[in-house]
Structures are given as C-alpha cells and as structure tokens.
Image (cartoon, rainbow, N blue to C red; front, top):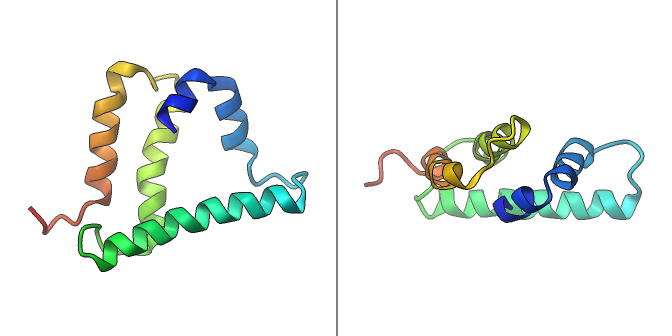
Length: 99
C-alpha cells in the first residue's frame, strides 16, 4: 500500500476519498467490501492468536490504517517516514501484554 501511495499519490487520494461514494457500481462496492472484510478477518485472526490487541477488529484496523492515511493526506508518505509509520502501525495492532 505504501509503494502504491507514493508512486501514485493522486490515484491513491482519489481511491481513499471516493471508495464508498454513491456513484460506485455494485461490482466496485463488492470489491471494496471484500478487501475490507479480508483486512478485518486478518485482525480477528491475530486477536484469536493473541498477537493483536483486543477490541472491535474494525476499530483496531481503523486505528492502524488511519495513521497511514493521515500521512498521505498531508504529503508525508515519504521514504524517510516509512519505517516509523510501519512501526507505529504494528504498535497500534500489537497486544500490549505480549513481549
């Protein structure tokens, strides 16, 4: 996702701000729903395995994804912030009781 956003900032911004727009057709909405569902299932599986923090999987995903989106919106999705962003996202996902 980082590589795509950096290589295609305008396209990424459009996709992020319009992926639930009313003008999308049923096929596009189904694809977006499948991607969202797969990400939520990934979070839930990590929770069951005890590696991701407890909580609503949708909310946990939104915390991690939102930090990345925030960087792209203010044009800070640059290589120098990549490692920091990845580390912060994993810290948001990780179960704080696991070392």
